[in-house]
Image 1 (cartoon, rainbow, N blue to C red):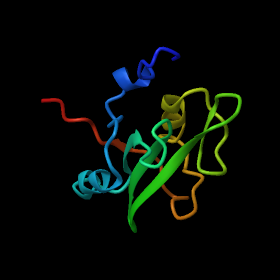
Image 2: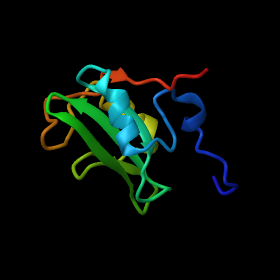
Image 3: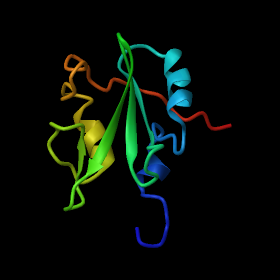
Image 4: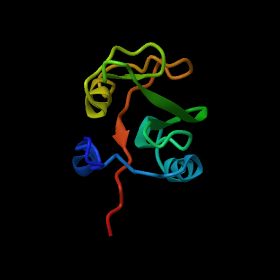
Length: 115
């Protein structure tokens, strides 16, 4: 990924919304049911990614942290994964390790609306 190309998951994952803002993510998720999610670029750091999730309390935004070895973790307590799609796939069948979302999994991807 040294050539400035987007990471490969950008091209294949319909739940990746690119440089969507936090408020735009929330307005999309407003129309969705609990456990709907999407991934977007972090607004604070362009090279980071955030998971936006609809919960019964409203919305949650969690950052994917890239470790020194290049692996990704979600929040503080997730195991490390090689890629963000692997993180997403894992949490479609496991509960999220996030306070306030312990009972939630990633069930309903919010797909990018391609025109």
